[in-house]
Length: 424
Image (cartoon, helix red, strand yellow):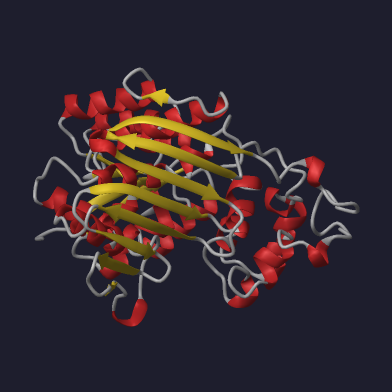
C-alpha cells in the first residue's frame, strides 16, 4: 500500500474514535485520520491530540463536516442510529466511500434508499458487522463451507450481553429507548442476524420471535431504592447494577481496576474517580436502573427458517455474568461448538475423536469484538487501496440482516406470529 487510505470521522464517540481510529496507531501506512466532527468539544480535542488532526479540520457537527468539499477517501459514519442514513447519503453525494456503523437504520425504506444510492454512485458502502472479521467466525464459516460436518442442519446461538453492559448501554445509556434509536434486536443483535445468514449460506425465509422488558421497570424497584445510586440508596450493598460499583469499584469495569476506556470513558474523558462521581450525581449513568426512561427488551429469542431446511435459534439475554457469544451448529456428519470468550471451536465428527481448534493469537492480544474491529478496518483499507467494489459486509449483505431483525421485532410485538420475509 503506497499511501494510507484517508478517513474523516462523522461522530467521534466510542466506535468512531476508540474502536476504529486506533488502527492508525498500529498501521500508519494503511490508515490516516485527517478530519472529524462531533458535538462535544472534548472529543474534538482527543481527535487533535491523539491523531494530529488540525483544528481547521475538526468540526462541531456532522453537518459542518459534510458541508465541506471532500476531505478524505472514506467517511466513517458513527453518529446515532437515526442519523446514519442521512449522513451516509450526504457523504456519498460528496464522493466519499462510506464505512457505516451498524445498524443502518430502524426504517427499512431508509435501508433500501442507502442501498440504491450506493449502487448509483458506485461507491463502496461497508457496514460494520465486525463479527465476520474475527478468526472465530471466519474459521467456523470456512469449516461449514468445506463440509466438515456434512450438510448444515441447525444453528443455536446465544448473545450473553452481561448484566453491567445492559445497564450501561440499554437501560441508562444511548440505546435504552427504541423511539430514539433502534429496537434491541436490531441495535445489539443485527451482528448476530448477519452471522446467522452468513453461516447458513442460504436466504432466511421465516422468523418468529418472543421477548420482553421484564426486569428493568419501576415495578421491580426494591423498597428503599433511590432515583440515583449516589443519593443515599438503601439497596446499594445488594444491587449488582449500582452505578458506583460498575464505574468506580468493580475491578473489571470500574476506574479502580484501571478502566480508562469503555465504559467509563463514555461518561467522561480521561476518567478519574472524582470526575466519574460528578457524572453519576448529575448525568444519565447515575440513575437507578429501575427508574430510567428505557423501553428496549432485556431478553429476546428468535426462531429462523432458512432455505434448504436449515433452522436456527437465537437468544439475547441481559442476565449473564460476562459479555460474550456462544454457538453450536449441527450437520449430518458432526457438530461444532464454540465459545467466543475462550476463542476455541470444538469439532466433533461422528465416530471420530474431537478436534479442538485454538484460535487465540499469541500473547492473547485482540482489538474489540474478538479482533473484529481491527479486522474490519484492515480489510476495508485493503479493499479501498486495491480499488475493490464489494466488501465482505457491504450494504447489500447488511440489508438482509436488517430485514431479519426488523421482521423479528415485528413478530415479537404481535406475540410471536410467524412472519414470511418475502411478504414482510
